Image (cartoon, rainbow, N blue to C red; front, side, top):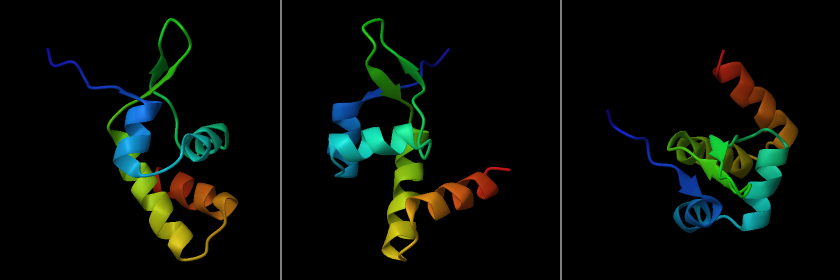
Length: 78
C-alpha cells in the first residue's frame, strides 16, 4: 500500500511561492483544505493542493476576487 505524501505548510509555501498568511487565508476561506492535522495541530496538505493553488493563481491573474474564485472552483468540482 502506497502512503500518500502529506505536506506541511512550510513545504506548501516553498513549492507554491505563496506566504504562510496567504495559505492560511485560503484555508480559512475554504479555497484549499487540509488533508488532516498532526497530533500537535499542524495542518497537512495532500498533493491536490498544488493544482488547486495554481488554479487560484491563474484566476487571480484574470482579476477574479477570492469569492468569485471559490464559486468557480466549487462549480468545477461538481
